[in-house]
Amino acid sequence: MDHFTPFGARVEPLPVIHVALRPRPPFWLVALICSFAWAIALLSLLAAGVSTYYGLTKTEQQIAWQARV
Image (tube, rainbow, N blue to C red; front, side, top):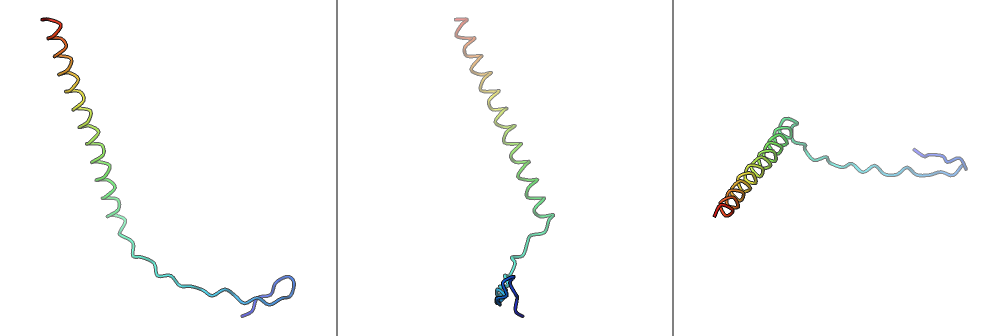
């Protein structure tokens, strides 16, 4: 099938290249992995906060003992 341009010249259509699509993982699996990733991120933030809190209280206690002596 030929295509015509506004100037009357014939143009051959471009060949269609069929690309095989990769199989996609099911949506529930992607949602599950994302939820686990968010849970791990939030738990690691919580652990960092708790660790910082205990570190600061220990340092503050050491400073208080040094001030008493």
